[in-house]
Structure formats: C-alpha cells, structure tokens
Amino acid sequence: MRHLLCAGMLLCFASGALAQKDDLNASIDARGDTTWKIARQIWEWAEPGYQEKKSSALLADVLEKAGFTVERGIARMPTAFTATFGKGAPVIAILGEYDALPELAQSADPFRRKLKEGNGYGHGCGHHLFGAASASACIALKEQMEKGKIKGTLRFYGCPAEEGGGAKAFMVRDGYFKDVDICLHWHPGARNIAGEGSSLARMAVKFRFEGKAAHAAGAPELGRSALDAVQLTCHAAEMLREHTPEGTRIHHVITHGGGGAPNVVPETAEVYFYIRHPKGDVVTKLYPRLLKCAEAGALATETKLEVKYEGGIMELLPNDALAQITRANLTKLNDLAFDDEETKFALRMQETFDEKTPLEVIRQVHNSPIGPGRGSTDVGDVSWVVPTNGFSTVCFVPGSAGHSWQNVAASGTTIGRKGMQVAAKTLAATAWDICQDPKIIETARAEHKRQLNGRTYQSMMGKEQPPPLEYRGKVTAVER
Image (cartoon, rainbow, N blue to C red; front, side, top):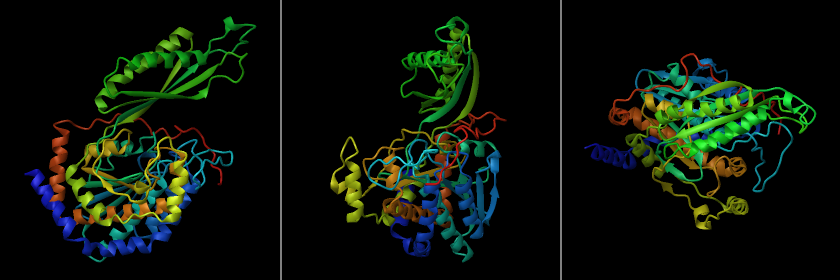
C-alpha cells in the first residue's frame, strides 16, 4: 500500500502541478544574479566552521531584508541563526550551510594554483552554493505565501560548521526542530541524485599530551616526549582497527605541537581523531576503546593526557516518501547543460584526475537514484527527530573527488551557478508540494516512525556540552 501511495503521489506531482510553480521558478531566475553574487562572496571569504561571521551575517541580512524574522546566535553558536516567515502548519525547515575546508584555497581555474599565504581555506564541499540556493528558495516561497497560494510556516536554518563541528546536533539537542513537520536540504555534487541513502555516524575527539622539555642529546633522561605519546596513541589505534566491526573508519591528524627542533624533547602535542560507522550506537561503544589507546600512550611516556571530547553526530535516516516527491521535481526541473567553455574547463580539469570521465558524461548530466552515503553529516541528527530529505545537483566536474581543490574551482564558475539554480527551484517546488498536500506529511511521518523502529534519539553531545567554537583553531581570514 505504501508503495502504491508513493507511486500515485509521484505521478500526481510529475504530471500535474508544475505549471502552478512557474512563479517560483520566475522568482528564482529573476534573483539569479543576486544569488550568485552572494554565493561568490561567501566563496571568496571561505570562512572556517564557527568562524563564518561575514558569511552568516550576509545570508541573515538578505533574509531579514526580504521580510523574514531572524534570530541570531542560536544554540550558543554566534554564526547560527534561523529566519522565519508565516504561521501555522505545516512548518517546513530548509537548511543552509556556509563553512569552508582547510588547505583547499584555490582560484576558479582548472589547474592547481596556490594562493596568498593565510588561512588556506576553500569551499571544497560547495557550501557557498548551499546557503545561497536555500535562501533563494525560501524567498520565492515567501512571495507565494504573501499571495495566499500556500500556507504554513517557512524556516531557514543558518547552519555553521557542518564540516566536523556538528552544529545541527546542538540545534536539535536544544529543541530548535521540535515544531518542524518536514526538513529539506540539498548539497552540491558531481551528479544529480534525488533522495539520499544513509550516512556514517561520527565521533570526534582531540587528545592533547603534556610532557617535559629537555635537551634530546645532553639530558634525554629528564625529558618526557608528548610526541612519543601521540605516536604510541596512533600506533595503538592502528592495532584497534583490526578488531572493530565491519564498516568502521578511524582516522586522525596531528593538529598541534610535536616539537620544533630535533634536539629538544617535545613538551606538547595533540592528535585529532574521528571514529565513523553506519550506526551511531557502534560509534558510542568504540569511543572508550580509542580512549584507552590514548591513556596507554600517556602511561607509557609518563605524560599528562587532556581529552577534548567534541561529541558526535548520528547517521541519516532516509525518507523514501519525500525522496519520490523530490525526484519528480528534480527530473522536471533539470535543465543542466554545459556549453563549450564549461566543457573545455572540465576537460582541462580532468587532466588532473586519476580516472577520466567520458566526454558525453561531462556534456549530459542525468538524474540518478538514491545512492549510498560514505561521509558523515550533522543532518543525520535532524533526520532522527523530523522526516528529512535531501538531494544533489551538479556543481562540480563529474569525476572530481569530494573535498578537493577541483571542487573549489568548479563551484566558483558558471558550472556551480547552474547547479545552484536548479537546486533552488527543486527545493521550492518540493516545499510547495508539501504545503499543498497534507498526505505527504502523513506518509513521511509514518515512514519515519518505521525507520526509528521504537528507538529514540540520543544525542552524542553532552547535555551541557558547549559547541566547540575553536575546533578549527583561531584562524585569521585573508582577502583573496
């Protein structure tokens, strides 16, 4: 029965009401230059997670000027905000992001170019497009609410620090989604994908060791090496990998210290770990075992261990009922086509790939079915408390790796602009459908209940744990 209902809904929205959405598309098209200017500005700023002061303010100001009621600094995060318009049911949430990634600074060129010295951040995940498109969709929907064509409450969520900061998990924990009926989001990608699979739950922790400095040759017996503690912790974690459940990912980087000269025993050092798995409860059980690796490193080296637990995020719960509505809209609205200049750009960039993408794939971009998720996202926490659905549109050159300088470059060109516009229209059309037909929400809620299967949401964030506002360190932005 569920599949028949979903199929019927899909047919209805694929064939019936797109003509009623022409005003939405016209609004998004008319605002295209402005939306692209916003996206490019955020692309230029490329601000780290929880430090997106200018990017956050820009989007909040745009929505406030458009008539939304803006609440800034929510959930103890200075760069998080909500922008709300309308009243009553349904309450539709649309997510927006705007944080950049380290070591990916890049101009909009198809070859690697190192830029000025500075923070080195770049939008390798396309979040400059994400926030701008979502805001454009919200403004188009708000205009239709003012005309009385749809009813309900529309709320844009300005979400910082998706890349490792877990901002949405803090929003969920603090009750900012408690009245939401449906949540929609999208993400830049190298394919058009309607709907989504699950994702990996993820936990983050920093282990900081404090030892004793000494002359490494003249008085080594007086020293206690913090770097040795980090190395032993990492080695123990490598041994742990073999004895973890299938699908586990454990990875790390050294984020602080380790010494400045070979003849000085390093006094401080810090290592930053992620644990991932398709199930959040498995990640929770693995954390104490990783902690023992760090405790062993401190014990063996006689150093002091400080644990900076940053909490974790849950896996996504996909919602097929919402995915089918989204897919119908994306299929109808997908007008992506690359011109000769864009194709030349893609082919030049392709020379930097390990694997080549056929020219016909670059020129013609098709909609794909739901695919599996290999990364992690704090949207997962949202999906545990409200039916949630996302999709991707092509904003990167097909074949490029995620979190790469190639994505920074492509998403700063008209390739990114075109994908952004399709995403804005798809978001708006899907929200329109939900507002028009209460059965969509009923079906999505029923599926959400089945997905939970009696489980209740348990945040990996402590009840009083503050957001890790300096998890990226103190970064000084540099004009590009």
